[in-house]
Image 1 (cartoon, rainbow, N blue to C red):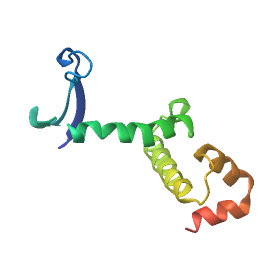
Image 2 (cartoon, helix red, strand yellow; image 1 turned 30 degrees about the vertical axis):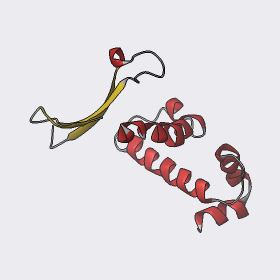
Image 3 (cartoon, rainbow, N blue to C red; image 1 turned 90 degrees about the horizontal axis):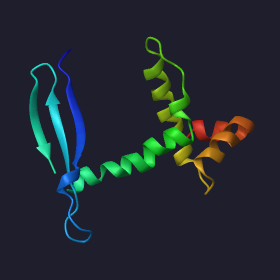
Length: 121
């Protein structure tokens, strides 16, 4: 592999104690793939903030854009589709109103004026 730095998170499940006593230890590691070296491992708030990504991006991509059902698999198509879906997510998030992202996505498909408004932001 090329010079790849892999980032991975792990919960040490056996480090958990009784509720209110001590939570499980969460670690994030940076790993140099070609050299097979752990460059850094950190524990707390940074690792816990990973759930912000899970809740505000991964869940949206799965539920609103049906990412897990996407059958695009060849050449550059998966990366291209992911980029387009992330751009759509950003534009829909910036659209005014309190409608859900799923509803905003549907309205953008049905209403040319709304679609034009969100892509011209």
